[in-house]
Length: 286
Image 1 (cartoon, rainbow, N blue to C red):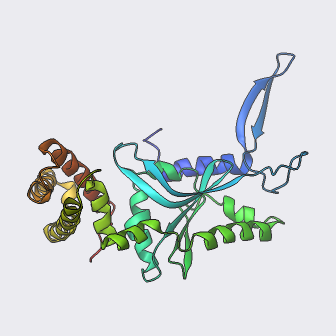
Image 2: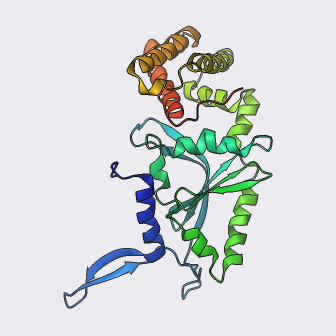
Image 3: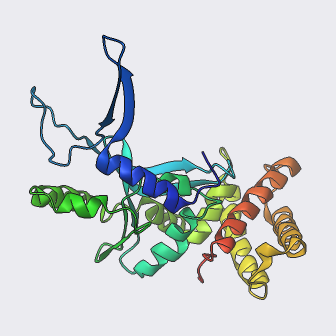
């Protein structure tokens, strides 16, 4: 991937490919080079001679996406809708009592950061944030108008019904929030708990790990509050990294966690905290 190009530049290029086709060339039987554009989406949504639809729609729940610049930094999107294999729609789901703005500030802003998983949005046409009661669209860039053009076609009603069914189907599918509630943790506490979790730990150690996640989150909020720009200074970066390491050494049960595992977990937590802080989407208040 070309890291020198911005998300908007990538998005604009793929938008052109989606709307107008991908340039291809080949040689015919006579050896002459031919040029054309291969269409990746049938905007009329027709079927082939055998009755098979020309477009295939797929919705993937909790799609795990790996970062490129920080390979061990993974994010899990609530719902991604594919059209012919292209991830055109990202849906971020929140509980009904959560302000939808939190879905943008705490999740989408993080995803779209160049140090996170913004490569997943190169093909993206629009984003949807919903709390089950309301839903808003967020465009990743003004250059990409493929969905607007799509909805202007004569089969607009069919397309709206298709995506409407997808949204209705996923209104209450925020499994991560449900699991967090089952564990008695906030969503941010649960994010840390998942990162620290280790298989085959005892029930008592599991409870200690929950407590460690709560304490670490509370301590981080207090520690970072007077340092809003800590990600831009090497001294404050080192301070935060050591703060996380000291906290985990003091709170993680030993055994089952070894020194090597604690060091590795501290690096992962630091990467998560740095990513969120750099994107202006640090953990929300409890």
